[in-house]
Length: 361
Ligand SMILES: NC(=O)c1ccc[n+]([C@@H]2O[C@H](COP(=O)([O-])OP(=O)(O)OC[C@H]3O[C@@H](n4cnc5c(N)ncnc54)[C@H](O)[C@@H]3O)[C@@H](O)[C@H]2O)c1
Ligand SMILES: [Zn+2]
Image (cartoon, rainbow, N blue to C red; front, side, top):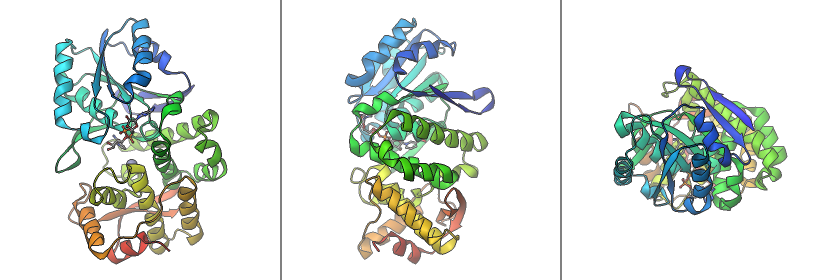
């Protein structure tokens, strides 16, 4: 088992990474000195796969756990589901010392985290991420929340978990498309912070694509270390944390104009990162050959790297970028690379260049 610490003073917590960890959940929760009652929130896909093991591990450690199932998919990440969860927590008399376990992908993590942040003004929560995206990204860093019909993630809080437990065995059941989408975030960490990780992914991609536990454990640990370091330095996104949005300005806009569902998040940010790499070659001195390496790695991972938009859809894309909640003062700001492993944020980009960067060669 590997351990990564997220350094946030009295709110610091550990990320555990390894195989067979679900069985250890109860023992790990005991160390947190929480109350005996808890709720496991999961979705209808994950419940039949892993709820039993999780409930057994909690029971063996003396916890009284209730299972709350929410529908699978992004549409469940809404206030209506939050309310349904509150009702169940109240019905099962969860109290201030009780805690919530989020068992599932980023949807469940964001939703259950928000429920935990707000029920009784906050109860402890534990993340048990079961998608690659959730293990390397959404379960770490404390951003929790839900969507409004006006847009994604518009309601939320910064609320850190007390523990993150990443069991690599859960990938055995993860659909290939979801797995590849998670790789888009993995590659991102190499580009923004760690050239050695990027080189390693170039070298070991086949092992990673085969979900080989040893290669995966090392790669996921490194991603979590980078996220932990960035969050530790800038918990609420005053500055440095912005680098995690590399490729996301275009990616979010693409998700938006395509209607959620056409592209998985990882697919949209794959296109976004390849475009951001091209812009970096034009504007911030990323060597052209490194922009080509970035594109090649996403392509080898089976992710889309370009999109051809009609003039009217292109306009929509730019409008969507301006609506992004991270835009301040109406200016679209990009994270761009100076080289692989080093990025700068807050870069203004002329809109005609964005169009050029998106297209196929
Ligand atoms: N909080 C953050 O910092 C942060 C960061 C990135 C993304 N997010 C959020 O994460 C969400 C996306 O997360 P996601 O990509 O994990 O999607 P997801 O939670 O929808 O999971 C993807 C699909 O895989 C299924 N699934 C999950 N684990 C499985 C397993 N082990 N085996 C089989 N099926 C499994 C789910 O039921 C779902 O159908 C978005 O809502 C996004 O906004 C949050
Ligand atoms: Zn992302």
